Image 1: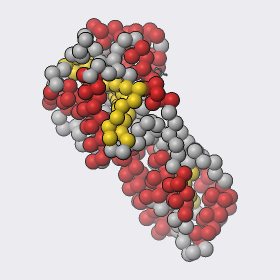
Image 2: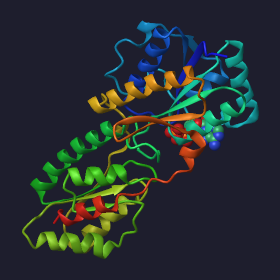
Image 3: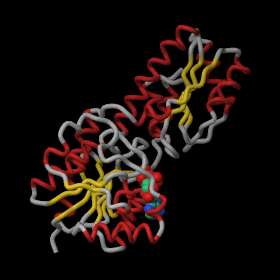
Image 4: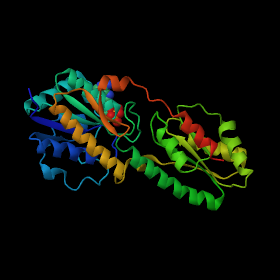
Length: 322
Ligand code: ADP
């Protein structure tokens, strides 16, 4: 039975580029003869039947905007059998026979639950954390990297003027990809990531001392969210070195902003592919990119995969940072 009417939703943490993905889903679907519904606030919109039929103009003027025009949510109710059944019943009532879920790994687990109850689903990885193992770049990651870089460049100006140390926490949940790449791009003295245990003396104080010997007087330490503790760390650095040290948690600014070219193109490709997969009768797949090729994986398989941490890049970063 071929797909005739699909729904698209954004779920979990938002990421710049989600709008470009929604646009690609809606335009591809309509241009290929499907009807498409935009669902508000993630899985809550399925439970509350909060959705509307989209036309080609519903997604005008959003490709350059951060956030998500469909809003997003975390939905504890969807994780109950009752919530899930309500969602399925609303989809069936409207004759919807396929759902595109734009979100992170939690959202894909929800998509799997829909598939298990007979609703075809395709996942699109939208998360600034880049923590989907089978996917080299998730939607929003590039924008977040660039936002962090710009913010830290500004911190560097003031750290340099005052001979200060700046300890900066960047997002990434349990993953250190954002921290590692931003750390390299911003010339951090030390980069702390959850994948690699660190030693306060060796990895921070000794590196700062070695740098100070060469007359450098300002320092940037990048700390991944999954390591945390930047306030205490800044205090300890100041106590031990006598160098004035400030902690900054970049926070939600990293989730916003106009998506970069890379995120817009990626989101467009992924949105287009998701609809093509549904039309091919595929389900329970996640769209990914590897070596510039758009691929798809079984969600179960994708969630079980582990992304290797790039140790070479980590070691290189530290080799050139003093
Ligand atoms: P992300 O998709 O960004 O990883 P979350 O982990 O918060 O964000 O997941 C988003 C939503 O997906 C949750 O609020 C919930 O509704 C749904 N979800 C998460 N985990 C599961 C699960 N194991 N089973 C079913 N639904 C889930």
